[in-house]
Length: 60
Image (cartoon, rainbow, N blue to C red; front, side, top):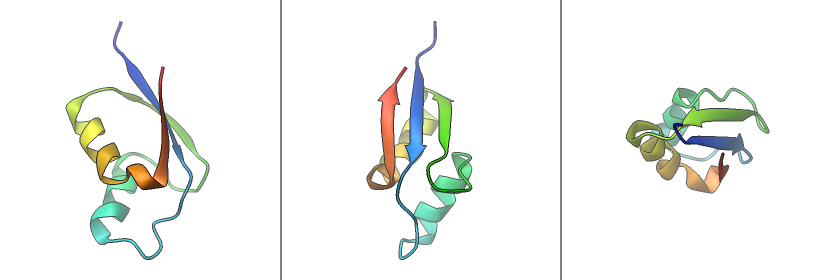
């Protein structure tokens, strides 16, 4: 069974860089406190690591 990541968007990108804003949008977030369950692969891990300070991440 493939591992998954439960990612919660907890802090805004206001004042952040365009790269951070793009990563949040690419992960599928639109509003604060949304939760997404993502596949645990290299692409998603890379985007999460760029904005880890804005997210809460748990392995499912």
